[in-house]
Image 1: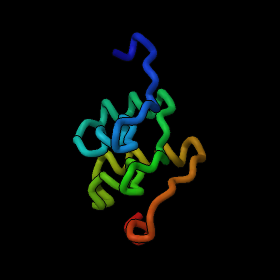
Image 2: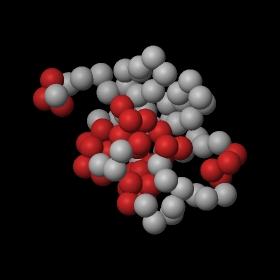
Image 3: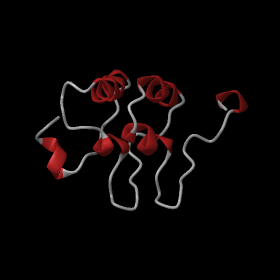
Length: 88
């Protein structure tokens, strides 16, 4: 699929991009691939949540750590709701 240069920021009916779905799974490999393709990490879905809000709030979660480290390395701002600010 990635060989065909898909639009990684295409949205579904819930206003979610592929990162929302990946963050609901447990696949760091997919997460890393789609982050490298510059998928929008701050895309808000129809519930007002961005992809990181679908990751477990456990600070030791490998996907959360990878996601946060990626954002820091690219100097990206993670837009998160008030409820998650205390756990990041």
